[in-house]
Image (tube, rainbow, N blue to C red):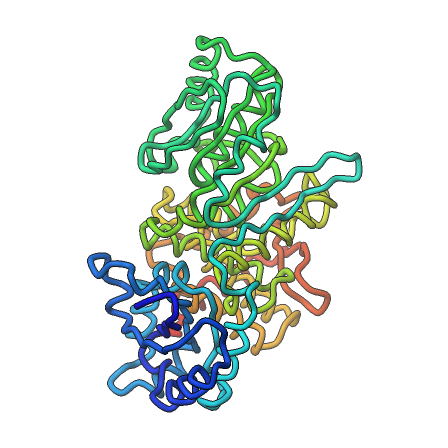
Length: 467
């Protein structure tokens, strides 16, 4: 395949011969500048790491629909099989696509026309794009968020000029080499969530002190949310605060953890109970790093991304990945700019997190954070429905989005419902009793829920839900 090709990919049932014929006719008529042919790629090739990436030379279009629609169109497929295939292939499909077009309720000719329109918009199909969003506070402070493939090359200019030494804090599994343009040393955290503890902060600070770092120097975190949380807390504490730049290499970090200045570590009693607000000097979201994430880690990020559908993002699943990340960054930047320390509106960023944090704590973090958030979003929607705040169609949309991102909508077996309800009260945003972020007629907002029986009933219903 060549750069003159448009490459169509999708789950079974998405790409039809009639649609390909319509698109081929439009391409032959010169409807898309620089494109001469249409290629169709099977999902098995896209998902096979041994197949090579020659097909990515073309403009890659992901044709997508709901699992129910695709199952109707694909002989021999059912929704559960498609959901499993989606979960396994999600990272490859999402990171490969320059353009995503829905086949839902559209004729083959309409789908082909949408592809043509998208391919003619350079803003949607250039892999080299680096987008920039800004977090800006009323007191004049601000910092950039750079998103794109190759965004990491902007790191030296994001670092404060006066910094002579840079402590690069990462984990061995990240494997991303960076150049800060300063005297730098790499400090590695242990793998996994176990690094998010106070002992890690002390060990790092001691190592930095032995190196001779001063308050004029800086920290760079390279990795996901665990790394940025710990490195940010070290930066906030060392010499009572030194600059930090987050280079985020996971989807979860790019759409949430790296932006907004929240730092912290876990205690045996709960998640993120010890920390500080410490805004970074800049954030870099390196999209290329997402291509090598383990499939489960990528889906975890999708769980966090799913919440942005319901707090202003709309149909993010119809955007290419760089635009999804930028849209999430834009929403979070807007919320954080107006509420730096979670005194009001910023709490909406915790949508889905009350149950998620309880599941993580009760299950000793067997669930990935985004997996727990996906379940938490559905729980919050079901709870809001029981309280008369939203209708069943809105609940179904929550389930559709979470399922689309390859995540479960069911409560895993083995949890003690009474303990989960008790953990709700320990959540950081719980000011008086049990507090949830819930959808409603005025959008997502903080709501107090004092009915433990209702909370338990919804948990029981989700544990037995089949869909």
